[in-house]
Image (cartoon, rainbow, N blue to C red; front, side):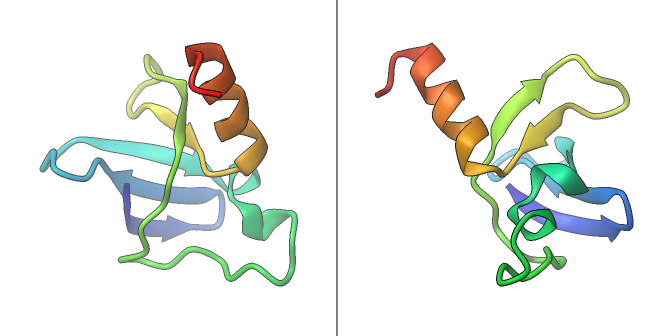
Length: 79
């Protein structure tokens, strides 16, 4: 994902390789919310994320937290 917009509540991201396909990462689902040593997201940043809610409107919801990504991998059997 690439960050394309930043707001106080989170960031809008575009799916890499899928022009015009967007999602959202809530501020609490970005590591900077929990760790002051992590820089807050900025437009142009690339994020590794997992899907939290693919059906959420108007955009799917994602998480950039390592714990959420680990859980998603374990649910898929990637561990």
